[in-house]
Amino acid sequence: MTHEFPIRVYYEDTDMGGVVYHANYLRYIERARSDWVRNLGNDQNAMREAGVVWVVRRVEAEYLASAKFDDELVVETELVAITGVRLTMAQVIRRGSDTIFRASVTAVCVGSNGRPMRLPAEIRALM
Image (cartoon, rainbow, N blue to C red; front, side, top):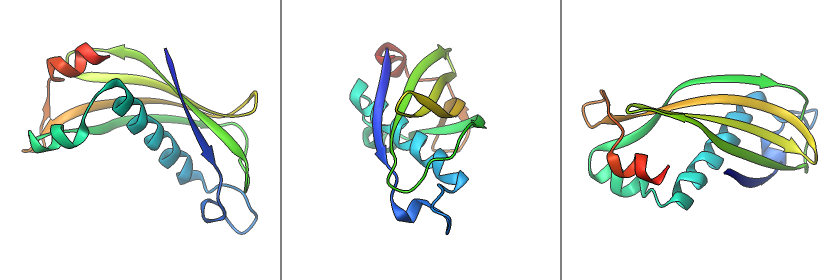
């Protein structure tokens, strides 16, 4: 199942040439992942209160084309793999039918001590 999250490029997202600054693509895919887990029923506030938070462990990104001011984009997120300790997702950003950005993202959970931990069973069940 693929989750879709719409994004409109605002002026603040761009450089002086009206092109999206490269780091903002990472912000776009972060928003999409947060929306995806929220829609699955994962309450990140409750997780944090229980001493567990999601962190990104690895991102492999490929910039294929530039997004520009006022573009309408869609971030697609798809679960690729889940183990006892990590979640790997494929994320793409599309403008219409064109893929302009592609990433592989690995996320893990850490406890309040900052150390990695097994994914809670209820999280694995949601996925």
